[in-house]
Every structure is written in C-alpha cells, then in structure tokens.
Length: 548
Image (cartoon, rainbow, N blue to C red; front, side):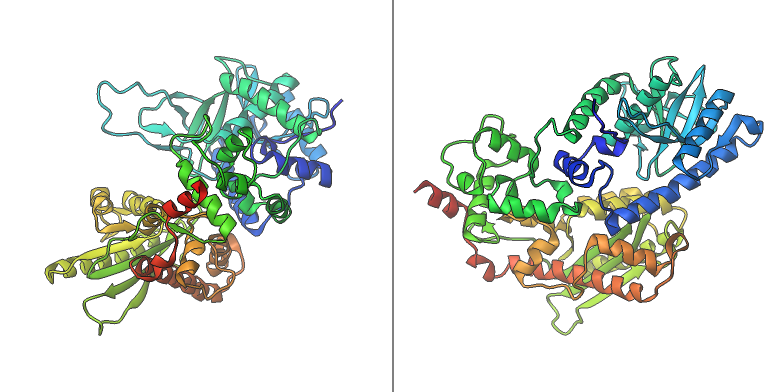
C-alpha cells in the first residue's frame, strides 16, 4: 500500500521536484521556502486572516453554535474541533482542518466549510484576482454569461454578467482535492452537483466554481502524483519556469549541463517534443537538418531553437535577426520603470529623461513614489504626479516640434498598473487620467517596449530578461542582490509592511535599484542603435553554418 500523503500544493508544478522532496527528504511537502516564497506565504496568510474576519463579521447575527472558528494549535486538536463543528451542524466552520487520510493519501485544510443542505462545500481564499470586469461592450450575439458568484454573507450563487472568471488551475485542483476529502468523510454537499467557493484578492464576492468535471481531472492528476512520490514514475530534471525559484535548481542545472540537455535552450514543452523526436542534447539540436518534429508548436520558430542551440555551443550571447537591428528613437526620450508589490499596487514610477537635441540638458532620474504601505490612496497621488509630469514633457516636446518616445522593458507590467491606477483613482484623486486616456497613450507609437524590440532584433539563447540582456550591452547594477524578488523584501522593510520592522535604508536601496533599471533600459536601446551591435553574428549565418 502506498504511504504517500499529498496536499493540494503537490498537485501542480515540477514532478521531479516532487520526487526529490519525497525521496531525499522523506516528505512531499518538505520543499525549502525561499525568502520570496516566504513573502508570498506571509502576504497570503495576512489576506486570508483579513477575509476570514470579514466573513465572520457577516455572520455576527447568528447563534454562536452556528459559526465556529477552529483555534490555532496542534493538528490533532484542530481536526477534533472541526469534527465537532460538523457534528453540531454549524453553518460556517472557519479554518477547518480535515483529518489526514493515510489510506487514500490526502491531507488538507480549508479557510471555511459552508453548510449547504446536509453537507459542506469548501471555500478557499487566495491572494490573487479571480475575476475581472466583464466586457461592457458585449454585443447581442455574444455568448451568455456563465460565471456564478455569491455575496460574501452567504452561499447564494447566481449568474454574474458583470464579471468574468480568472481562476487558476491550481485553485480548482485544491477545491477538488478538498471536495474529495469531504466526500470520503461523508461530509460533502451534493445538491445541484459539486461546487466550491473561491475568494480572491478583491474579496468582493465568492466565485462559485463547478467541480463535477474538475473532479475527473483531479482523480487522474492525484493518481499520477502519488505514483511519482512512490517511485512508480521515473522523473528527471528538465529546465522549466519553476526552476528559477527551486531549491534543487543548482543540482539539476549541473546535471543538465553535464549531459548538455536540450531544455537548456528551449522551453519545457518544446523540450518534450524534441526528446520524443530523439533530439535530446543541445548539440543534436544545433546540428539538426530538416524541418521540425511533427508535434512542434506552430507559434514557436524552430529556426530560433536551432540558432539558440548554435549560440550555446559556440558561447555566443545573442544572434542578430537582421543586418541592422533597430529600435524607435526620438528627440526627447523618457525611460520608465514601475515598482509594484504583489497585487497590492504600484508604489513607484521611476523616470529618466534624455533630450538628444540638447546636450546641455541634464539627463535626470526622477522617481514618483509613495511610502505609505500599500494599498493606499496615496498611490493615486504619486501616480497622478507621474502622469502629469510625463504628459507635460510629451506636450512640451510636441510644442517644440520635437519627437517624443517613452520606453519601458516589458510593458505588460507597466500597462497593467497604468490601467489599474486609472480604474481605481480616476475621479477620486486629482490628476489621475481616465482609462481612455491611458489606453490612447499605450496604443500610440510613443510608448515603446524595449523587451519587444529585443525579441524582434535578436535570438536570445539564455532569455530576454533585462538583467540577462543589459550586461551584454555593457550595463551593470550597483547592488549585487538587485532583483525583482529581492525588491519585494526591501519594500516590506521600507514601509514596515503588515507590522514588520521599519528599515528606512531600504527606501534608498529601492530608489537606486529603480534608477539602475531605467539606466539599463536606456543603455540597452542605445546599444541596439549603435555600431557595436554589429559584432554579433547573424542568425542566418549560424543556420548556414549548420547546413554546411
């Protein structure tokens, strides 16, 4: 009989990581927690605590026996308290701990169990958004809305035409996992199918998640994951996105490098296609002749994969796609970098202005920042000041008959908080633009994504992140620990987030980090326009070298 006991977090992510945790540490839940992961865990717990307090407040008019919160303490005591609450028929059971099922190999807990009919459905709270506003321009031929939501005060799910779902697969798997445990205990609610409740970052409703189909997928996922932990499924290292934060990465990287594994230069899914086709090493891919394997994804350039492999073999950082790489330039150029904290908001907009027509004008870094802990209305004030300054510089350039461009590195993040700030603060804080104004700026050719320019101009075998590419152009960060993950820790200390210890020195560190990011963007785009970039080989030349 299997001895593996899995929690919901074991149902997604790298199978090899799961196997190593189980076989070398004796527990599938034994993964080390990085500082970044600890930050996310702490932030999520703080959010859960706040939401549970809100939900409990909505039930204040009910008898004490109808609303039960399981106290902190040893797992055995929490399970006993949950059992007693179920036996008493409580309507809401907060912080429910389900008994570990050694035979079936399951363990789990729910932020709440909600009584529906003669049983309970699980409710979980997550620290990311699970809905977005529905498209207000839905035409008469648009499919009918299907998302069902419930108010926070009780389980009353109804079709919600004002929202669209944004839930993640791991959330659905966790709800299915808890539902399976409730069913095994005889506690599950079965009225009108299987359902779970999901509350996200906005905490403005309960999303009703249908689970009948999800339970079928869950059973398959759970069986395979348990087989992985029991050693019945062979696993091995393969580079995937998760590797960046995995405590096993240094060991896996050494093994992958020794065997020159093809996943070092292509994505995890693409690596699987190549391995299935017998192309297991970077060298084999670099020397490959002919077309891509039949299962190769159409949206991914196979030639780029080969060029990446050729670069890796030859020790080349990049390859040019064209004779003359280019990026849009202007008379007045503003580099922009935004700093945010998780889903709470954007606390800093850093800028660097360069007037290429006036050598006497100072190239000046300027940051628009709030040090009030997020979320805060003062975020709207700092954003308004940034927007007012940016649009004034833009207007001044136009008035002087000069061209203008603002640059960022990977506009997805900046665009999110440009739009999000307008949505939240327009009409509330003076100077905040409307969503339409922001969208018009984003759509203009004066908002330039240097990340996109890098992808358009180069094949990048080791990734396109700013900290990967800017050093090739000669830029270095002043802080050796500079990274997006580290900045989260610095910010938490800089504002004493959630009651933590205040460290004002971290504010200067964040300003330095942000200034370096905008400087790196400037250096990189100027390098793309320089003659030095021509020292890189052409991708076509590398393809031709392979075909000789």
